[in-house]
Amino acid sequence: MRSKLKTTGLLLMLFIGMAAQAQSVDYKAQVLFMYNFIKYTNWPSQADNFRVMVYGNSPMSSELKKLAAVKKTPNGKSIVVTEVTDAKDLTDCEMLYVADVKSKDLEEILSWAKDKPVLIIAQRDGLVKKGACINFFIQDDDRLGFTVSMKNLEARRLKIGSELMGLAEVAN
Image (cartoon, rainbow, N blue to C red; front, side, top):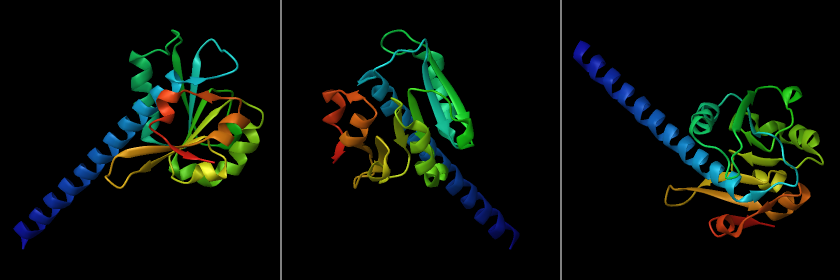
């Protein structure tokens, strides 16, 4: 009985470890996409640093901070990553990542971002239909993909390069 529990416990730990590893890989892939969004998107205004805000408690914050420690924007600006968990703490930024747990707050986020050139990226699939500029999704072959809303980009006065549009699923 005891060895059966031990084996079950080890299998459970192995399964949890594999799930965590898969999750980590997914966030790393999202970060790579986000760095390319930085490279191939044109913003109408220029700040001293490129500010990325993560809305919601998410592993994305630490992955983005790892990227920011070793990379700069193509024009040499430092990437500054901030994490907030309350919509009232949102501040000026060029890119806002909305964690899955905060998807329900999209209407409040859009109200805050009104008239701001902020690239709003949602972790949850389908949020471009509700106002996000880009959302991630898992393709049929289990690869990470992203959807871009041209209408929402234009409303934010953002232009995304053709290098990315060739990889994207385009909405409206």
